Image (cartoon, rainbow, N blue to C red; front, side, top):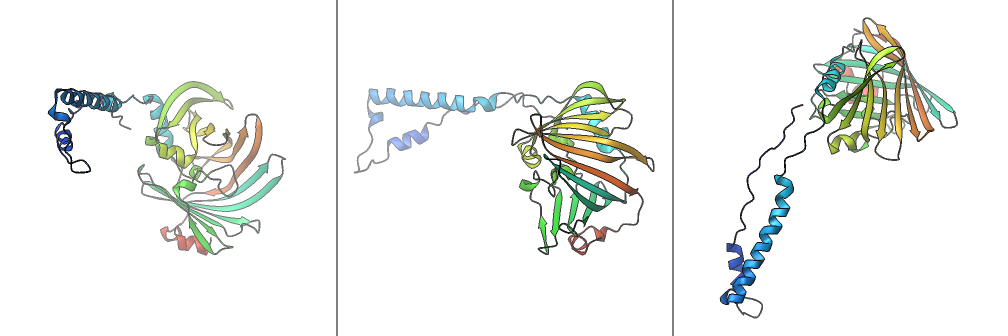
Length: 316
């Protein structure tokens, strides 16, 4: 992302005296004319007021005259994240998912899903359908994940009990996806342009060398949409896969911890087949989600017409 820093600005405009003169000659209530400019004392008072106005204008404009601070963006860290973003993740993919929701009492709820993904140019379209249990059966989720950073991703959730499709607003994307620790924003790739990156160190995770990179949203819109203020991500050096992250949540004084517990190479493509997201407040675990992926296939015959609101409501 190009960083634009203003190093110079035009000087502040001089205060305009004409409006003051006009005001001074306007009739006051009762038809009398202000005569402040007709005496030496009035002239001094007027000049003093103008000096005060100029001084106030200068200090009001002072923050605008100062150069914008440069963002702390590390070119090496950004280059690594660009490789992560460009990594081949396959096309025309189908898979089966198992979502396990674990509360703080270790009580579990298990949900079965079917997933479909197809690229459309640089964009990615995906659909998920809940197969079980009965209370979420036939619920569908459709995402258009746009590559263009300035374009908001589109998401829809079909609720069969209401026979209604709900569009997910940007203000709702920080919310929980179907009761899990993943948010709606987590279901799409975040634009690199909306983050500043810094390479913190090199480390080892599960015997594999990784880069440890800090990612900080650089727009209020991104902070609001994701609900995150900072992330520390761990990127494997050999395949550019993010295998771990710690996330600072904007509200509730909480952190989220993402972990790839199992990574497999399927048809020459690296696929996380067991992932967890854990929400903690301090040392206390509030909730945890385990996402298992199986029966992964690439190059399947998927049509663009399937990835529509109509297809969402029709089902797999």
